[in-house]
Structures are given as structure tokens and as C-alpha cells.
Image 1 (cartoon, rainbow, N blue to C red):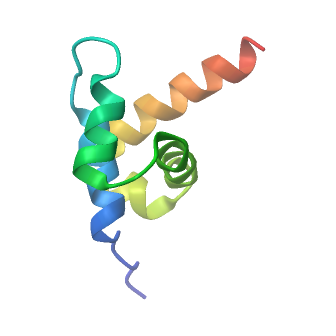
Image 2: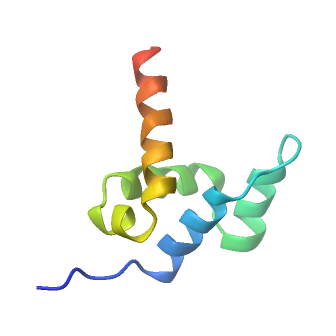
Length: 77
């Protein structure tokens, strides 16, 4: 059985995470303007995506990098 593909919004979230942002607030502004999401909702969706095997199949480099960052943050608490 073939895995279902990521939806457009999920792909757009991963694409935004691949980009670099200069200056404070630039990423949050892009989240609001390009995706139409509140930053809090964006990060909730992103966190769920990191545990989604479809996201890993779609963009393993980005997902693995973000998983490592998440684990580092959790370990630092």
C-alpha cells in the first residue's frame, strides 16, 4: 500500500523551514503572510509533522535536522 502524500500546507511548512531568515520576526512574518497561520499554530503543526513518516519521506534532511534540534531542546530542560 502506497503512503498518502503530504498535503499542500504540510509541504509549505517544510519548505518554509528549509529557508533561512534574517533578523528577528522575519520568520513569524513569513508564517503569517505566506501560510496565513498564527505562529503558535504553525509550530503545533510543525511539531506534529516531525513525527509523521510522510514528512520524513518527503524531506528527510529537514525533518531529521528539526528532530535533532527538538531533542536538544528537550534534553536541555
